[in-house]
Every structure is written in C-alpha cells, then in structure tokens.
Image (cartoon, rainbow, N blue to C red; front, top):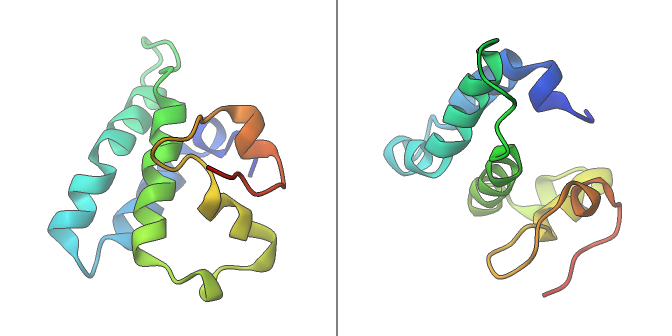
Length: 102
C-alpha cells in the first residue's frame, strides 16, 4: 500500500514481528531500526521521521535474506532488486515498477 507506513504503522509493526519467528535474533537485529522509525510515526509529538526511507531499505533487505524470490508475487518481485547496498533509494525508486540495477 502506498504510504502504508504512515497510514498503517501498527499493522506494519505487527507484520514485522510476525516475520521474525525463525531466525529470531538476527531478524530482530535486521529490522530494529525500521521498527524504531515506525514507533516514531505513532508519536503525534514527532515529525515524520526522514529515516522512513531507510526503514524501507532495511525491511527490503531483511525480506531479501529470508524470502525466496519464487515465493514472491510477480507484481511485487521488483522490490527485491531495489534499495540494495550500494544503490540509491528514494520514494520514486520504490514506487517505480521497474527493477533497479546496480
């Protein structure tokens, strides 16, 4: 969902926690900063955290390590090739349906 982190931060936090059932310690380490950014989104005193883009990058990387590409719906596979280490990451890149190359 576009702007899902801003519109449904609690749902996303629950989904993140549910994903960390197998390699729990490593998974929690991989998504900790992303989770913290979502917590800030829930605080009405805080401005939306500019690190939300970093959170998206961290979550994509965590998913890439745990999900086989063949298990991902065709319409969402392009995300697995975005915001990789060494690549730029922006909302425009994330919204694009094109695969990002190194």
